[in-house]
Image 1 (cartoon, one colour):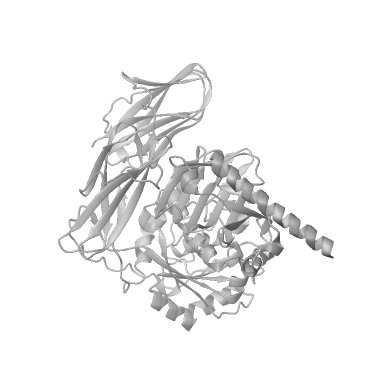
Image 2: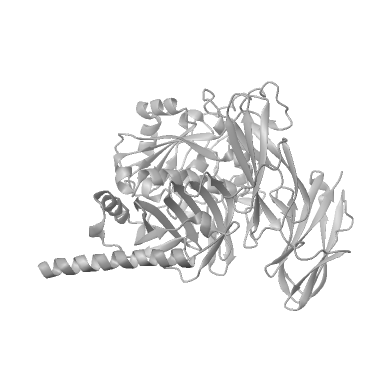
Length: 619
């Protein structure tokens, strides 16, 4: 007995020494990684940590729980690119930041997309306590804070037993959008938006839900983050993002029938009172896994304020199914990919459906609104369907049937104004190009909602979203010649102060094409050398154009070609070519008559190399 105890004490001491030594070596060599595996005895954990771990391990969707230490992302990332190792995954991964909101090195929201495979990396840090959601191909990993500097990494599995979403009907008359509020007195309509604000979500949870997840607070924060990720990844206006109105435990017993519980929730006086108290537009209840045939349901697809409630099983909320983001999408009147039954719903639109697409021979993908029984054997991607956005050269929607982005852009103002009795704080965003060429001039504008005029402005820029320059401009617009960042993105931030004492900041992530960084392409052709051969992209003729224009390019050998038209915000408007083309000269004709007048780009992608040129449309 004494020998066993002594051996355990020795091993525990040795383990702590090895871990501390590992940390010391990493600190000295500068090789700190984002995720470092740790060997930890569960007996050495605090009672709080053991309780958290016990709840995590009881989740049937969680597998291969590992202890890890999380590094300082702000220092590990370099100019918006994050390279890291993922325990259990052989290939080192690289993600590029698509949006960063940072108060400090220990408190931030970091959203990124993988460069070497379809997937996302969402990292939330609150005073160094990190929650993360990482998808790599058809696998999803979650990270939770356990205690002090200790975190756990786990991968989730897709439960094939349930059809997932029980939205079989909608009800209630359409609620007309709330009247637009007047522009603040003294403001100029050129850069001040109507005072809509963001949609506010109240997240309630049952006692069973609290017991079903490692930490209910971390789960709720990631629920909000993952929905907003769907917005960012689909290039939808940032006014669609949601904010947490509040969270509370609700004494609500799950009956085992999700439709009955949905109706009980809508009529629950405590839930209604909490909604009134928090001035929430939407309400979602997290529950234990009590339903044999579903993980979630929404009470309306019909933009009805009185029925703007949903139920989500807590352990699937941010798992492979991403049930929370899915059900909230229904409350914005978004539909499953295969749900074409309008049921007389006045808010049904033909184009409001999710979408499935392939990114390779063995990689089938589903956008967030694909139904559970329609999933391709993997989970949902955090993105709304959008025919103007591509992943690995494949479009993520269609114009006629699969355009969640278009539909939510139409409905968000109604949802955001379900409650017109809430104080809407000053909101600032950056309007302007989300895409551009280095060494070209661009202008961004401060977009403001709410607050009292007059306003003051401060513009700053960053290469990584954490470290910003001193103030570079104080007008409502900011103009700069785009630099050549080491990474892919450049960040333009505006801080706005209103005369009633409020302050708000907004950031635009600008994707930078860097073909002009190393040399200048004069004359008619831009050339890129690949394997000793030159791929050339010619000028569009005519340019400027009001009708049709011809775009010429040359290929030294047969390759897969993508030729896109992109607007000044970085959003793809048209794909002219997305196929294998033979060696030689090619011409693609583009009819610009349907586009609004303005500045656009045409981008040629061949074998991982892209070339971009400007196109001016006039009418």
